[in-house]
Amino acid sequence: MTEDARFEDGGERPLNLGALDVEDLQVISSLVQDAVLPVTEIRWQASKRRLGLLLNRIRWEDVEAAKKRGRPVERVQSLLVIDNVLGVASQGVDRSDKDMILQVLAISFEPGEDADGAVVLTLAGDGAMQAKVEALEVSLRDVTRPYVAPSRKLPDHGA
Image (cartoon, rainbow, N blue to C red; front, top):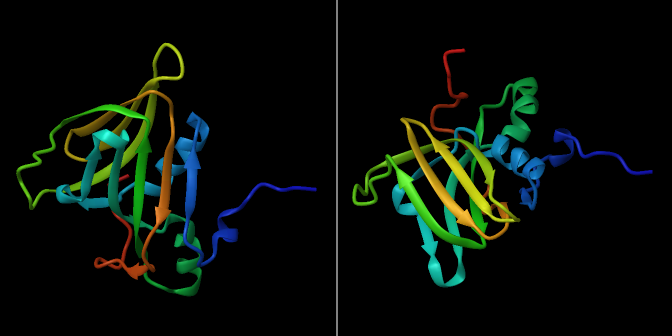
């Protein structure tokens, strides 16, 4: 008998997830919500048809356990990779401003006619990035050990 994975099953192990459909992408989107990155940590590799972003994401999969144990909120550096990319566009992202920090609010997929479409990263401050893709293929992989978030708390969205 098989069961669905639970957040508690993640424990201290690094994440390594892939998304080939919209439902999988929603999981990745929830895990990168409120991730931050300097604009200098975005790489568009046209010859490999790949867009990569090195994010500092909140370990949402560990938040409840941290609260129960009285531990501070942790972040981890994660590599978000979008494959099969045909082109990239953005608004509100000044690549020449090397001090610009971006905050990811969500990732979504806008389907095209066949398997193609666009992966859209909604950013704080009315910013956005769009990767036109031949097919949906996104991965998220933790690449460092978790560290205590500098603020030691979760973002406040004024809800």
